[in-house]
Length: 294
Ligand SMILES: [Zn+2]
Image (cartoon, rainbow, N blue to C red):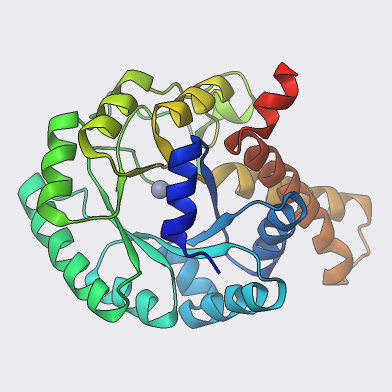
């Protein structure tokens, strides 16, 4: 089966992006897997340190491995936003395919030193394990925020080039107008995040690397299409999925106040999440664009 590097290389060549969706449990995994399976598209399942603490590192790895073995689908597992080398090593040893080694809160030089060390250690555990580094500010918390964070520092092409050369990362997470979480006006659909497309193109040209767009929930669809054309190869969606999960569950609870059977209530959450995942996968893979243009 193809590994994650193969899949990202193909995406880069054909100017499409691979969807990355965060999960906290098997309900989320079911939604992400079924959407990708039905559309016959590769997909990346992500768990942050908080999500891994809830589901279990080896439990998450086992659940994804079973799906891969049973269906032979290109479903990959990423250790999202990992703030220590010990935590990254635990994921690599458990069988994750990649890590977002996030020391972006440190001064540039320290971020470089720690990320470089992480690349060396993690590749010694698994040579095909991919390490993603992060520079610039994209805010924290894939949650509902009162207002979107303002004036975040964008990644410059020069620092991206320096960071990549000094660390040896496989994937770069730049700050290009993206932010984690959704503001209340974005939840209502009244506002959308806008991307700096020119900056994406400059960073792609300067590094030649796979680029991940974090915090893509609530982003203008056309910006996402143009961002992919400019060099984005992987796109993270979390908050939109969490919102769908809650709305799905609330609907199921409201529809039958006496229902206590989890497997009768949870499909509503799965279906709500699947709608988000499928729509995003279609957009990222270019199928939606072709359909609307045709
Ligand atoms: Zn992120």
